[in-house]
Structures are given as C-alpha cells and as structure tokens.
Image 1 (cartoon, rainbow, N blue to C red):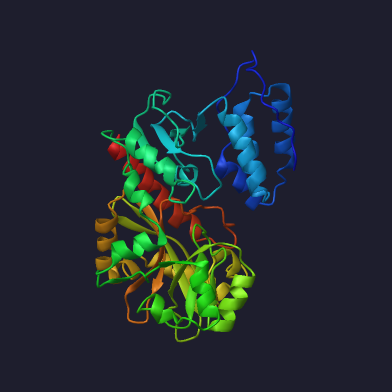
Image 2: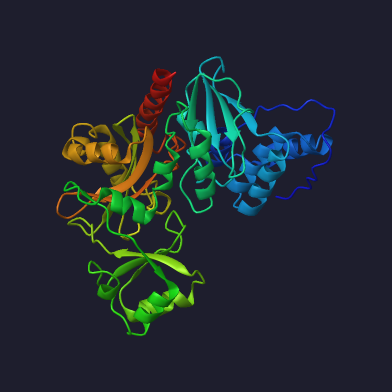
Length: 407
C-alpha cells in the first residue's frame, strides 16, 4: 500500500482524534477481511485534510499489518507533527478515562493496551512522548495513567525522559528505570540467585569475539565460565527470535557471521528444555498486580518456539495441551511455580509485565524474556480455539480491575 501524505500548514477543517485502533484493525486482518476498503477511506480523508491525524495513525497500523514497517513509522511521524493525543473509546466509551504514555514505533514498541481493554467501556487516550518531550501539559484529564513504553534500544532515551516526566506522579508501571532494565542481560542479572528461577546469563560480545570463536582462537568458556558449545547467539536489540541461532561449533559461528552484519550480540548457554517426547513447550504469561494469567502455550519440535510457527491450528493434540494448561493453570502450573512467580513480582516491581518461559529439566521456571510490550490478544478463531477467549477475557478483566482500583 502506498500513500502520498505531505503535511502542510494546519487545515481549518476540524480534526477528529478518534481512531479505529490497533485491536479492531488487527481483528479484521485475523478474520481475513480486506484492509483495502478501510485504507481507501482513510486515504480519502487525508487527501481532503492532510492534518486528519487520526486517519494517519490508523493508516500506520494498516501499513504495519501489511509488513511495511518503514511506511508505518513515516505515517506515525507525520501525524505526530500535529497531535500527540489519540482517543480510542471502548464499548460506550463512558467508563474510566485512561491516559497511556506511548511512543512512536511498531507493534512491539508499547504495551498492547488496546487489546487489554477489550470488553470494557474505558475511554483510552494514547499520549505520545519521546526523548525530547519537555513536559506533560498536553495530557488530557484522566482517572488513571499507565506507562506503556517498552524496553528497546530505540526506546532507551524515551524511557530516560519518562523517568524525569513522571517523577512524583502516580502512574501504573510508572518506574521507567525498571522497564529500561529489562534487557536480556539486565533480566538475567536481576533474577540471578533465585533458586526457583533460571534465566540463562546473556553476555554482550562484539563481532570480533564471535570471529575468534569461529576460527578457533577462543573457546566459549573464555568468554564466560558458563558457556560451552552449543551456544545461542542473537543481535542486541532484536525480539521475536530475529537473528537468533543455535551455534553448535566453529563452523556454525562462521556461517552465522557471514549472514549477519551487526556488530554487537548476546550469547547465552543453550538449554535443552525438550520433554520426554522430544518436543519443546513454551508459555507466555502475563502478570497483573502480582497475579499470573496464562496467555498462550505452544508446542513444536524445534527449540525456538513461536506460536505462529508451531502449527497450533493444524494440530488438535497441541491445542488440547494448551486448553488443559489454561484450564488448570491456577491449580497446576501456577501452583507448581508459585515461589518463582512471587520472586518475579518482587524482583521486577512492576504492575504489569509478561514473560516467555518454559520448565527447565530440573523443574525450575526457565525464563527466556521479560517485557511490558509482549503481544497478548484474543484474535484466534473461536471455532478452532474455543478455550482461548474465556482465558484472555479473564486476563483483560484483571487488567481493567487494576486500573479501576488505581483510579
């Protein structure tokens, strides 16, 4: 999809700040509806009024859903030249007024709060901040505020500014420094020493370090005592498994470097967390006000488990596992890892966060990643995943209850 959008001087025409929003647009995409009619309608609005910033914001979501990240960011930037606050009323829109501090970025840049408010009547205002935002005088009156900016290299200056902007204010998830600390190595350091948890150490290394491994001038144990072949390597600043590979030895390290041009990487020990049947199982769990809620559970034969590539829709036996995990979560998985869950909440000190995890061979909770911006949603087709919506709506209700309590 392409569009011509040249921001000009502000038009005398009134601008609406009400957006269709992330959840509604992605629901259309998941259900197989064409996004082209909506794109055409939004483009017509922008053509008639180049400062229709709500239309630009919705176009940016469509561009991202169409795998055009660069165009999505350009559309957001164009909109933010004129407006920094966007309204997304849920239901009747006459409930709590919630201000969420967000920043320019893709779907993984901010907490997916639009999904978390599904089923409510909350009047959401997305308030965009950046590293240069001088103050919060532009924020509308609200009942409760939430810091939704996630950890990333791009967001680090934004979070540093948020720490200044939010100092002394009552904001859920408002400790920007704690969010900024959710790097790969930051999480492993933060959780070190908890006997119920295992977050494999993530070591920052340069390209030259990997090159020395590749030609045999250095062994993994010389980088850190906990490293031995195989190791996991990934470029710093990536998510969702981008650029992540298991390196079994020198040849694999050499081939890996030939296919990458990044200069900085994380390396970690490889943990074989497969079950007796040889399959790997990974869970996503959301923590809300200290309580754990299941988000999804994926099973596949490859060690790098992703829900979208785990053939969950095609494998009824895998869906049956996920359904049982969700149904028995409080009395089984959560009970088994209650000490680990308490340690996570205590050490992280955040009102809301998510983890990707598994069970280590020794029974500990194996933590792969901690983030406040992990995608949680209820978009999976009910005919195939009848157990998902009830579980997700319990999660959403808990998030909304936390907002109400804070308000």
